Image (cartoon, rainbow, N blue to C red; front, side):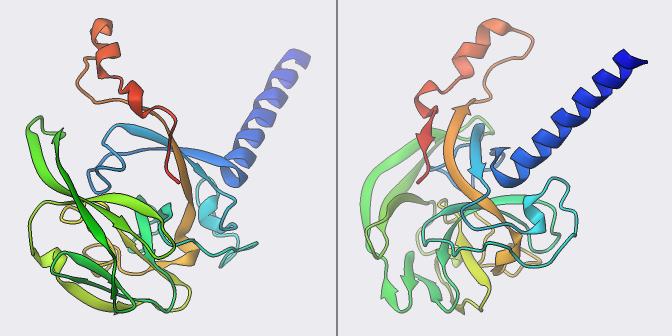
Length: 243
């Protein structure tokens, strides 16, 4: 009995430690969709920090509704990549880039992002060719956007002047944020109402900030054939910072 008790105690301590670390420090997430290409690829495994914006009940394993709002809250910086719970269900994990802060007016007009009436500068880059999850190769237009203050990142524009490239204006309400995917024509985000996309993101729904890619798998390998495992590893993406 003593041995069983000791093993049970060790297991409970391990679970408690995992709960504390997952709630207050880090959690890992797998990228299943193309909405953040080229910054994030399907198969990326990344780490998200929990403390930069404070904590809500969504920060905790299982999302127990122990309290409302956020404690030790700090604002999100424009351009941060964050994980949040989908506003329509409060359960699904979503990752996007925060580009609209409370009180901002956001608009997409003829492919260009406008923040508070000012166009965000973007520079045309070489086209990107990549393999989609379905296996086909895609070549798409690529642009580098630079936010006020100098923060920069790369976006994709699959279709010129599409519906998603001409939406808004939206005024971000207090206590909420506006999120966009870097793959602008392939992202259901804050441009779309929450019954279709995300709508405005309540601050309470934010889980944490994406910090770095730990490793990445292309999905081209075969689990039954170990010789293919190394081929599927995207080593160049390991430890890539997302800040």
